[in-house]
Image (cartoon, rainbow, N blue to C red; front, side, top):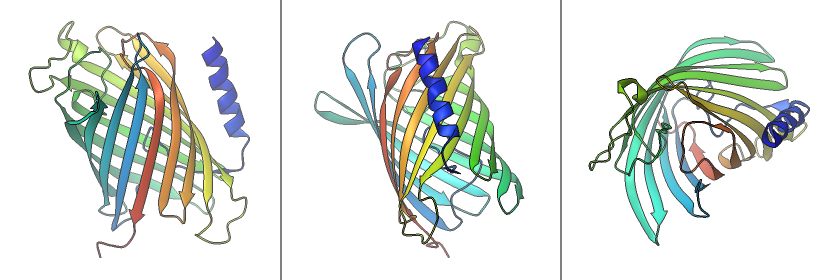
Length: 273
């Protein structure tokens, strides 16, 4: 109950800030990165063990390409750090296609389809499916994002299927359908600073709250998390995100359900013309 009250207060706080942004951290909006651009991203997550004080550290370098205003492509690697050793655990490719857009002066509505394919060689130690550093498999889904003046809201729904990890690490199968799940998200973001734009060199400070859920199609059990984030955009090219993921419901077992995230991103525009 305490965590639910905290999540409501965070959402109310964000709803009363100044202007909208849609550069979400734990989820992707329907909008794409700029066409003919390249992005370099480095994400560090530090998650707490569910049954001990141990920390799990993952480092995820990512390369992003804006092929056109409708199509973008990501490729990322999964690295883990433990016992003073940095080891590679796999990688993933992600593609998003924005197929619908209605743009007005102070608002727009966009819908995009996306797909992810992940490969992993780490030990499988949970029934929850996580293609971002834990499981091999694929995901396909749809994202919609609405911007109205000062408010940006984004939702997504997707089907996810877990495969066995390589090196003999099999997914924990209860029955043939336990490999399948539905992911769903709801994200809300706003701009704190500046209150008035003067130049692209101004630093933007954004805040957001993101709800992230999953329901297994076999057991019907679900997880639901909330992730508040503060974000800095520097000279319209560099981005720093600081977030923390809290558990609201944890029916599907996860060894590392909560923890922090820091992300650095740098974008190069008009480099593929």
